[in-house]
Amino acid sequence: MSGSLILPGVGVLFIGVAVFILIRTQLFINNAQQVTGTVIRLVRSHSNKGGYSYSPVYQFRTLEGQMIEVQDNLSSNPPMFREGQTIEVLYDPSNPHKARIKKWMSLYFLPLLFGFLGSTFTCTGVFTLLMR
Image (cartoon, rainbow, N blue to C red; front, side, top):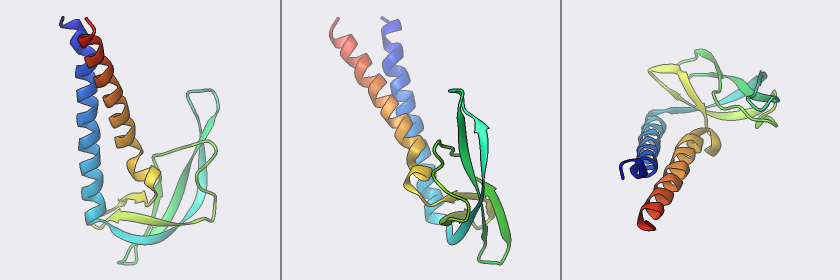
């Protein structure tokens, strides 16, 4: 019986992680300053599928006038951004290097992924338990 609780247990854990990340994201958004930035280059890295993925490096000027450069932690192929593209940036005023591109995918991908996997694992595990 304890082995059959693993899948829904992992599912509930993943849902908890999704909620935690979502709350942190909302707190970040609520406290962040918004400015305009520019993608200055794309960093190419090997993906685990044998191909490449690209993450944008962007710069922006804080409201205090400090120029900041950040490499986004979300990468994709094809690239979601192009060099020279103007973007909206959210940054933490107490730590401007803690910045995110103001795009739905950049802000909500991880909580969506963990929430989807958690829901799938939980429902599958509960269904399996009920069918015994």
